[in-house]
Amino acid sequence: MKAGFITIIGKTNAGKSTLLNTILQKKVAIATSKAQTTRNAIQGIYNSSDVQMIFIDTPGLVKPHHHLDDYMKKEALSSLADVEAVIFLIDSSAPLDYAFNQEMKHRLETLTVPLFVVFNKIDLATFQKMEEVKKVYKELFPKALFKEICAKDGFGVKDLLNDITSILPSHEAFYSEETISNHPVSFLLQELIREQLLLNLRDEVPHSCAVKIVHMERKSDSTHIDATIFVERESQKAIVIGKKGSMIRKIGTNARKEIEEILHRKVYLELSVKVGDDWRNSLRLLKDLGYQD
Ligand SMILES: Nc1nc2c(ncn2[C@@H]2O[C@H](COP(=O)(O)OP(=O)(O)OP(=O)(O)O)[C@@H](O)[C@H]2O)c(=O)[nH]1
Ligand SMILES: [Mg+2]
Image 1 (cartoon, rainbow, N blue to C red):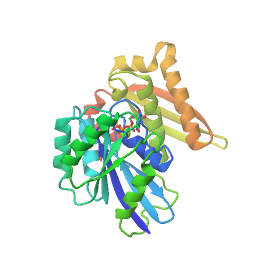
Image 2: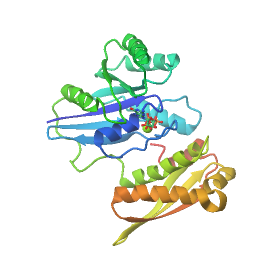
Image 3: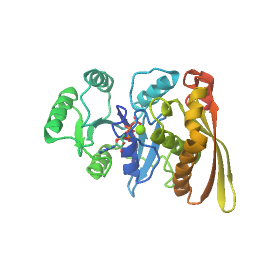
């Protein structure tokens, strides 16, 4: 038996959470086209007959503006310690970011474990762009292993898993076979509500939102969930609620359908909106919302 931890690190929107879900063939992390979708490190556990791979999806690396961003950056960078391999995931179709790549070179060149530089979204990049991107990263990371994938449709992912398996040490499984994530199911449910906020609200509003499940009760034929959406200001509360409650209804209906699919049962979802003054800078509220150690 082989087993080990592999972290997935990279810029926001590179496709890290999409890759995690594709590997597991299950949704354990939310993924949207909005920047800064993921806020916590999320372990997803892949099992086969002879290997257990624990992948760590991390928040995309961005310049910190709030205490929340500090937490996210710390979550991402601390995931580089105590792993057997690192995947540096790149959106091959995005413009090259010289400063970011230099920072990553600086952070990753001291790694003592194998580094996989993985070019994602190859479906979106032209041949010419791929050649340019590959040349740049091969110069930056001469000792890395290089892979090309499309996390969205799974192209190249099996091949990547085989290569990772080959470098993992012999070890007993770390988790039982039924475990798919290190987070409780309530975390995923909160995230599914937050995903709807990201999909339906614009600009800074979804980034100013946090979700907390305040009550969950399993009845014989259904599950009742009360969740609070925290915003930073009164004006955002009005946007989240929408005209005559239309926005919050849409978010609630979509999230409920997603949650029903995960729980395989009927769900009643009650959403309320609260102002948590400048919560992204409040250490107390961050802790309460699960964004502090
Ligand atoms: N065309 C294409 N789109 C992809 C691919 N992989 C991911 N995406 C899309 O890229 C967007 C970002 O994906 P995420 O998985 O949320 O990216 P992330 O790296 O987790 O982003 P953060 O959590 O913000 O750091 C989503 O709209 C995905 O559907 C791919 O291989 N091809
Ligand atoms: Mg993500």
